[in-house]
Image (spheres, rainbow, N blue to C red):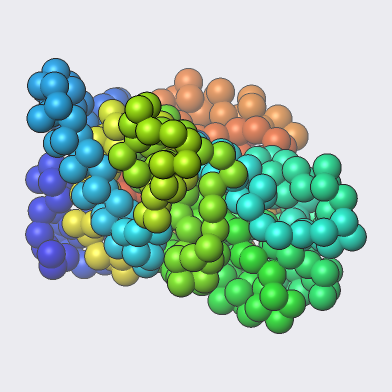
Length: 392
């Protein structure tokens, strides 16, 4: 589709011109609640697309139709693997559906070969599920090396602590805390220099910025933020070109070919595809909703999504600087995605006072995170900036 084509809900891209940020890329009236709210909290939750109801009704109809309907449910999952692969620059055979991104991180941490005295690298201020997953192998005698000591780690911080016994680097592509974006090419080179795996959570990157999953050994992502979907489904993508031999740590009936209780255990063969990591039914209802979200994203060229988010982020960050706020998000577009953050003691109070004025942001952990997305425009950013002094 070209820039002037319609999204699935009829919202034109770059309406009224081609200036990034001049208008929403998806029409506001395609979402629940945006007739009354200025929603700038995509880094926490995105509003629901009204058209999700059609996806849910299709799921309900197919689920009610016995074995034939179940075949259609699984056909939908196959389509969504392909669409998720397009968004991540991976292959459909890389994409599994787990319940959430944290389960993917835990699975990744259990998978790589390591011996006592080996180490993994993670930033102490990374998202808790990333840090906790990296810490899991400590029970096997694996050490943790901390990259950096502040709110954001740089590529140089990771390079400074890897060594010949580093087995994996765990990292969020974009920080939930500061909005800083990692250079995946640099991290790939660091991992390759010591033969380590690169395990990446792209939950705050995928959608606003292009993600090159081919650089990762494992990529995980939640679906209820920038992918415009819901809870209960997380992407777990294993790069088969880099880690084809990865096996699931445990098996369920869905992990094996043609399960049949009449066969002895030796008769079960583990699947070779990505569904070997899915021990039971994948989250089919959430997958139907995810397909609708991905259709909206894939209808917009990635460079258009990035330019839109970058323009709004630049406008927002400059406005925060003008207000004298302690902005923690880098100025350079290549080092941020769509989270723009400032440090403040009363983050929850600022969030609540903005909400009283029908402006939705995210405030926790000593910072306010403002996340404009495809349904926002410059007017939304300016409205937030105008109200911020009162909320502070």
